[in-house]
Length: 486
Length: 89
Image (cartoon, rainbow over all chains, first blue to last red; front, side):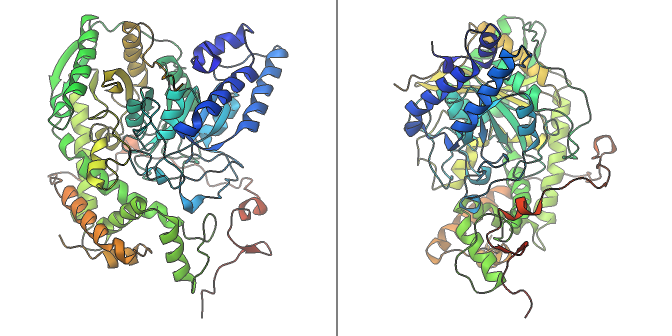
C-alpha cells in the first residue's frame, strides 16, 4: 500500500512512529498526481514546491522532538474560491484568472498553523455556480470512478482529488450542496457545517447567508479532524457563532436508541429507485444496530429549490457587482469610457451560468418584484427552519439520499439549467435552514458511488460524526474504496 | 412571464450576444416559472431574532495590507493609484 492511499489518521500515526517522513507522504501524493491528473483534472493550480517545503518543515519539527498535531504533514487540496496568500485564486473564472490574494482566508491561516501541506487549488464550477464542475473556465474534471462522468459540483475538484488519492483531505464550500453532492458522486465523505461554525473570511462570496466552507476525507475521523481545525469564532466574520467546540477526536459508535427520521419527500419519484434502495438498506443496518427509524414529513422541501434560486441569486448579483475590472482580475482590452469598461469586462470575464444567476438576482431584486420574490423567499426560509426544528423534536437526526442519481455523464445536463439545478434537490433545504449535513458513501449502483445524507440540528456535528462512525464500523471500518485509475 | 432580458442585462452591467439571446430568454423564463411555485407564508415577519444576532467587532485601528500588495492585482496602476477611464467629463 502506497502512502497516498492512507487516511490522515493512519499517516499521523506513521509520522509519530517515524515509519515515514512528511516529505515521503508529499512525494507519494505528487507521484499519484503525476500518474492521474491528466485524466482526472482535479486541480487548477498545483503547489508542488510549496508542498515540499511545508513537508520538510514538518520533518524538521519531528526531528527536533517537537510535538505535531493530527494534520501536520497531511496533503490537503483547497478549493479555488478560498484565498491563499500569493497563490492563484481564480474561482475557475476568467474574471480572476490572474488574482493572487494578498492575504490568507481564516481557514487557510488555521491550517497553516496546524502544519498542513497544501497540494494545490482545486477545480470548481465558476464562482461555485453549478453541480458538475463543467462551468469552470479552465478545464473539466472527471469522476475518478468513471472518467466519462462528472465529479459533481461545485467542489468537484476537491472531491475528485480526495477520491483519486491526489490529496488526502480537501476543503470545499457548500451553498446549495456543493460539498455533499460531489462527495456523494465521488464516493468520499463531505461535511457542510452548520452556518456560522466556520469563518467565511477569505472565501470569495457567492451567497453570503448560505455559503459555508467544509471538509472532504476518506474516513469519518479525518473529516472530523479537519472540521475541528477550521471551526470557531472569527472576529473577521461577524456571522460566526460564539461558542466552544469539542475537538472532534472521540466517537461514540453506539447508535442504540438513536432516533433517525426518514422524510418521505426525499424518497419521491425524482429519486432513482436504486439510490433509494441503497439508502434504505444502510438505514436498516443502523436499525439492526439499535437505531430507531421514524417516518416523517418535511413538506417545505418541495419548495426549497425555488427559495434557493431566489435568495442565492439575489445575493450573488450583489456580491459579484465588485467584479468590474478596476481593482483586480480581468479587464477588457478595448472599451470606450468607464461604463463600457464595466460592461465589456463583465461580459467577457463571466461565463453564461454566472451571467444567468446575476440576471436572475437582479430581476428578483428589481423594483416591483422585490416583495413577490425576495421577501417571499426569506419568509419561506423562516418557515422551513421552523419545520426542521419541529421535526427534530421527534428524532435526533434525519437521513436522506444526498443526490437523486449517481454521477451523470459529462455534457448530459449542460444545456438545461433546470435539469442541472435538480441535482441539488436533496441538499438545498439544509443550506436554507442553516443546518449541518454530512454525506457518507452507502453503496454502489452500476459501479458508481451512492451517498447518504445525515442532517442534524444546528451545531450537532458531533452527533453526525458519531452516527457516520457507527456506520463505518458496520461496514468493516472503510466506506471509501479508492479506484485504481491504472 | 415575459422578461425583458436586454433591460435586466443592462441593469446587471452585462451584454448578451445576439445569438445567445433566445436561449437566455427561454432559460430565464423557465427558471422564473420554477421559482414562482413558492407558496406565500402567512403571519410571519422578517424581524431579527435577538437570540441569533450578529455581533460586530470594535471599530479600531489595526495594521492593514500594504498599498503595493493591493496594487499588485490591479489591471492598471500608476504612481501608487489605480488607473481608470475618465469618469467626469
